[in-house]
Length: 399
Ligand SMILES: Cc1cc2nc3c(=O)[nH]c(=O)nc-3n(C[C@H](O)[C@H](O)[C@H](O)COP(=O)(O)OP(=O)(O)OC[C@H]3O[C@@H](n4cnc5c(N)ncnc54)[C@H](O)[C@@H]3O)c2cc1C
Image (tube, rainbow, N blue to C red; front, top):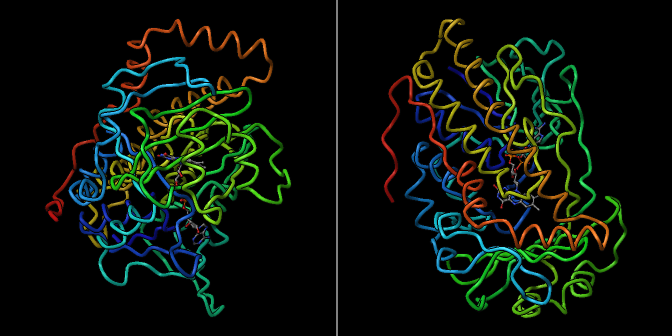
């Protein structure tokens, strides 16, 4: 099969790796002239690692990460450092935190040479039910290319999704997030996780080399104008418990950036239209409150690769086989991702409850919720296996 993937984010790249291993001819179109991943750290949970394993990338991923978060006390604290809730050990023992740039690097390295076409914008041709893709190269030259399947991994603002009937659009969560990574290792003093205030949240997690990925979240208008982002983060969180001030001291102000947090306004009725599928944030953009957006994109990738593995190497597969693989992808991935997106949204709303009385009530409920109940919820999200491959795939990488 000749397969186009629109977008070289984590979802598009992971899909390209999986489909190439299954024998497909894959082209990845990326409109950015170079891959400069927006973001800093990324939490990858056992479900995301299971997806990477099935894509043959598990060993490369383990080599650049460590399970050092498992040694830390985790959960939610108050700004004065008192604990609101402890997460059971099993909810964090499989967590690995990676710098996004490093994850991108192992994904790109696993591709066959020439797969990635940077500086190239791709979109559905006027007849969106055909698999013609309009391609505009970096020099402005445009043409139509035809594929057997197009995977739209073009992110939360997906132009492909917006061209489909019934696109629900995005909704702003009410909060925006700053992210950063310290320039050098910082002692987390034995604990990690999140600290919840009123309309404010701060989170921290260790990278393999001891540097720390952190995020600050604040309730604010989506288009708030802030002259100095780093100064604002210091103003909001600089007096919170240790080691938050030390993390901010250890961060280069230039790497701190803010993003408004949006998700899809409604779950999509389908991730598939003819021989087009949506994948990753284009299909199920969710708030980052469970740290699952990229994990789910990698699950999408592993699922699609497994379901197409029986026909991917066939240059002219029967349409009924393509239909059944894509229908199964659509079914499995909507069933899995849409409840997670809903739960992430609810958790974010709880974290950002606006009133003082609401915060008191929230904190009391958190203190009374048994750790085992939180562990059970985490396990439901973090336990996942890809479908069995329908055909042969190349052996996994060993680095
Ligand atoms: C604050 C924050 C923290 C987060 N933390 C986590 C976390 O800890 N763990 C986790 O799992 N997830 C996390 N996420 C979510 C995660 O970042 C996303 O779910 C993930 O990056 C989505 O990947 P993607 O490949 O679907 O889309 P993207 O990464 O957005 O990639 C889409 C790509 O498509 C390209 N593109 C778009 N249109 C075109 C076109 N027409 N032609 C060619 N190329 C095009 C874009 O340039 C882009 O490179 C977080 C998100 C936020 C905002």
